Each structure stands twice: as structure tokens, then as C-alpha cells.
Image (tube, rainbow, N blue to C red; front, side):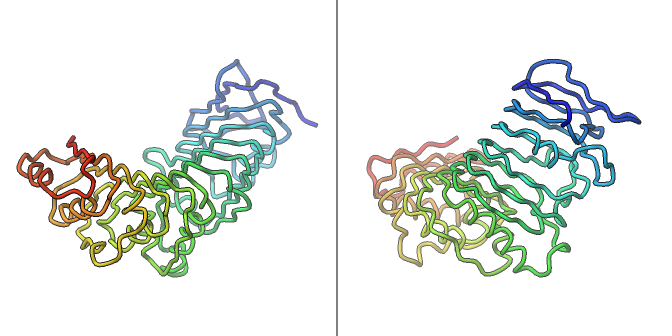
Length: 327
């Protein structure tokens, strides 16, 4: 057995030397915020550790036999409840998350990092206690999800390198597998890149039985069909946030039956970076006419436009109780 560090929350720096070394100077969240390689001997364990925070560190490559990579460190943290990893370099290794008590996991690419670093890797999840997942990383070449059934709050902002996948359907399938693997959430955020990955092939969404809050970046502006699919598969949806991007696709929802969540559940709509393009106005008109229980529509404009605001305020509303505000 190796040495054991029994603090619940620790502060230790990244240390790089010619011999295996490790330092625990005091209490606090476990933070590693040097850009140097993190040196933790393989036999080091943290049996009482509950919070772990990494920022801008490089983990050892598999060739450094006396050092533990991220997977090895996590194996020595049986009581870990929160893990935050920001702007780190995996050195080409795959990742495995198997901490049975982990409740919050944040994987954030960080500013200036290489988004493709995980494209040729695989990631394994077996986290039965996880309730919060933020994944701002490269789309890995493969995932294996053993258990993410407890996740209720999920944020996905994925990038991908097309050269690492066999064809466009592979990109779609990989993104879909990740979404389906966490299908019990109550809140879901998908970035524009995630939606673009889905559009690379044919997909069928699951029914999100528990989803009450949905946020889509580039929402209907990437493809009205994507938005329609999510609405039709989210029967309990109450809060919808759409972030407008640069796309100029047609808004096609008016050509199809109104999703049940729109007519009988939707209460709040947030429109962010609203530019007031023709299709944007069509979208606003659609929701005001069909959301019978709508209580609030908040429009965050890219630029204030009084004439446009008056036009929207004069649109007919199915819900007389609905308030419209501009920011």
C-alpha cells in the first residue's frame, strides 16, 4: 500500500522534478493550476477526498510508469463527490470515470486548448450518483456509458474533428449516444456544435420524460426540424431557451401539428441574441399563437429596436396572461 492523504479538501500544486515527488501544503479545495505536468505517485491514495479541482495541468503520458494519470488519481478517491477539470491536457489517454459517489462533474476545455485532443480517445462513464454534468470538450471517438441514470442537469458543448470519424453518420451516432445515455435529465443544454453533429446523419431522439428546461444554441436557426424533434420528444417541457446564431434556416414549425408541450405545458420562453430577422419574428409569432399557458417571453436583443419591439407587442397571444419583455 502507498501513502494515504486523509484530508477531505486539499490544496496541492503541480510539481515536476527528476524523481517522484508530491506535496500537500494545507487545506482547501484540491487545486492544481500550474501548466506543468502533475506528478502523483501511482500508489498515492486519497481515501477521504470529496472535492477535486484541476486547472491547466498536463497529466503524465502512459510511458511515465511511476506517475498516475488522471484515471489512476481518481481510482484512489473512493469518496469523491465533486470533480472539476478545466483546460487540461490528457496526453492522448482515454478517460474513465467510475467514482460511485461522484455527484458533480465538470469537463471544460478552457481557453486556448486543443479541442481535438480527445477525438481519437474513448471515455467510460459509470457514475450512478452523478446529478450534474458539464461537458465542454472535444467529441471523443467513442463513449461507453454504464450508468448516468441520476443526471438531472446536463450541459454539452462539443467540438469535433471530422478526420477522426469514418463518415458523417459516425459523428451523428456518437453525439446521439452521449445524449441518449443521459436521457433522464430535467435540464439540457446543447451548443450549436452539438446540433451540427446531430445534423451530420440520421437520428431518432428518445422521449425525454423528465425534461422541463431545454436550452439550444442556434436553436431553430440551424434547422427547424431539430427544434421540432426536441419539442415533440419533451412532453413535460416548461422552459425553452433558444440562442440565435448566424444561421438563416426557415422556421418550419408552423407547417406541422403543434407539439403537446407547446400547447399545454410551456410557460417561459427566453430568446437570446435575438436579431429580429424575418424568421425570428415568425418564430415569436408561432409561440405566442400556440403556447396556451405561456406566462413570460423574454427577448434578449443583439441591438435594441423600438419599431421591432412594438411589432412584437402587437402580435396576437393565445395566453392573455403572457408578458413580453425586452433586454
